Image (tube, rainbow, N blue to C red):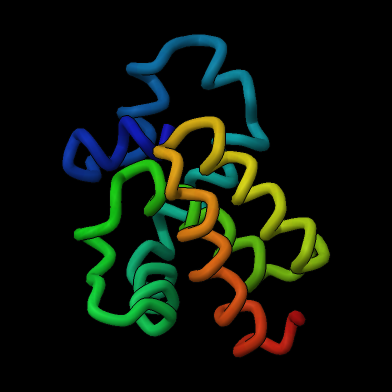
Length: 119
């Protein structure tokens, strides 16, 4: 959902969910998570921007940016332990992004988790 949302220029997320079809609309937890990230995207990108040197979030690959936003949201919400959040983000980066993405994602999330007092 967030990938389609980003590629379509960040329209109303409900339009994206509708366009993705029935299976997506039926996954209420995924829709709620995507809505939370889309609503808070500026704050999430700011957290990422503070953690990387010489990189603006828009220069980060789309998949990596989405993985980072999801993970930073989870770190801010605090419902899962930070190591679990980071491990899951690394796993997503390994599955969906390039070979350098897991190390990059880890290198961004670790200082964010430390700054938030989660590690």
